Image 1 (spheres, one colour):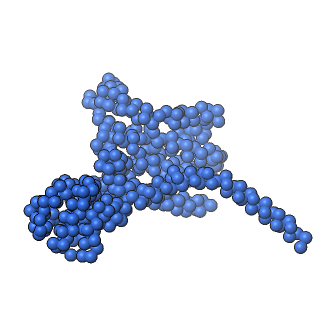
Image 2 (tube, helix red, strand yellow; image 1 turned 135 degrees about the vertical axis):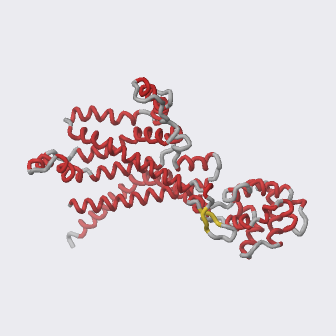
Image 3 (cartoon, helix red, strand yellow; image 1 turned 90 degrees about the vertical axis):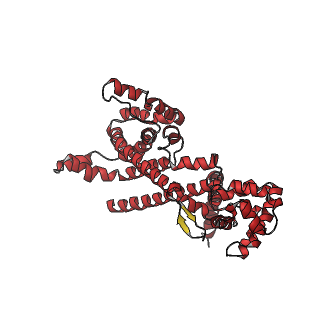
Length: 402
């Protein structure tokens, strides 16, 4: 009984300490929610929600809800009523744009249909088709059926180069229109190549920094950190000057006789890789250096004294200890490369564009934000999957080393 007040006092003190700690964390938590979690949540919602058609075409939506078959006279009557309503509310362009996202060339169909809706007379199925034969297209009606729901997976299907035919079956888009999967593949392939080059270039630099005396190492570290103090736009435009056909590199190669022709190194994948390797190389060096610095050199010397060759000592003793740094640096560089936009846009040209450039196109030019959100969501899922695999592999490696 005598110790009970002390326990209560300790409990109250711990409770107050926890509340103070929570109050200190709350501003950061709110900042993360407002600037990170909420935008991602809004993006994910935008990728599956688009009510431009459902909100402005209520009669057709009601017919779709009650009927599963081919459009009849009642369906065309509902469509004409909605076209007249769209003309009155001036929403025909919005409705047509929504359908045009999935079936090209239909925006003008809805705007012209709304303008002439008041002149149509029953039977509307005949008068609408006589006005424009596209109104009888089964695929158009299938797209309208899909768009009559505010929530849809159509944008994810389009992001995977899939679509629905006139019967509602999921099929691949024609080969000439399949662009997203190939662009995803090119984005990941170029990002992997950039990561590999950064690892090959950054590993010896990080090893040199880790083995030099601290004074010299700190001096060289300034050169590694120097790019962080220079604007990304300045570094990218500098590469544009260096890599162009009349630039410094080509002039040097021709002047020294190494080549007689000027090499195309800009506005293609080559320019994208060169510029991004230069920009992302410090992100590989720093994690490697942080892991290499604590490694004691006598481990390798002990292996050499026991008869191991330099290569064997490196491969069996030194390299395994740097695996966490390799994984962290590779993951960081790869994720940054996958989402890069400015550098590919400036030096990549048509062949050096990445998926981020197409996302920006849908947000700024086509204004198809739902499509941009679906592409971004797929990219986010791929990056999260990559991080999960990295966590699993590094965890397994650490268990083996332990």
